[in-house]
Length: 152
Image (cartoon, rainbow, N blue to C red):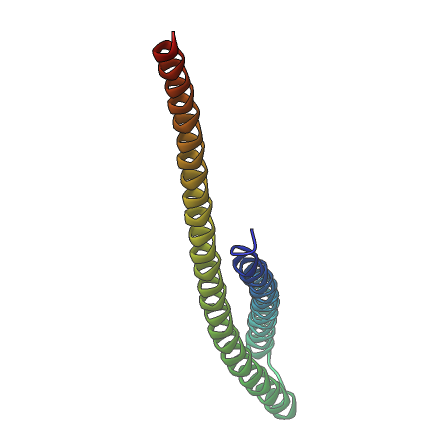
């Protein structure tokens, strides 16, 4: 069993690494969803504020209020641009985290395959050894029977 012990250790380490990559992926996905919700809220707020401005303009609005409202909308547009950029960056992080997790999963599968091959090989060796032992017992018994029948 000492031959598989280092492999078992590698498999355990790979599983731990894969699990950590999975946790990072989950965190990245959560962050992406939060940023997406914030962007959606900003877009809704901007839409509502623009609708209010449109209504106010139909009813008549003084130039100072119009100027302040337009500046505020411009600042919302800037915030939206930043939020979209943040979402794009977070999406890249999610893709990288997915790639990392897939790499770790491949490593686990490779070690699992090696472990299974070793177990299969050990099982085959045990079956062959058992067959040899059985054959030796049968041959020994036949030899004794032949020897005993020659003596009589």
